[in-house]
Image (cartoon, rainbow, N blue to C red; front, side, top):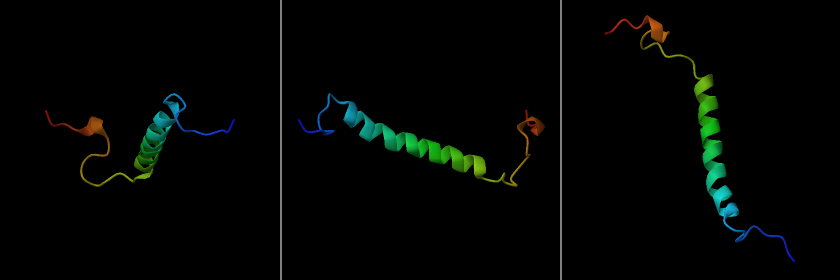
Length: 51
């Protein structure tokens, strides 16, 4: 019996779909944390006095 990922009940197809999406989400979140704050407005949301 040879080991393969082909047609193992659907879990392998799910991983081929889910892993790139999860990696993209992780990369985007890390990049957002590293991004410096922009100078377009207040630094803190609590300082926003617009009603």
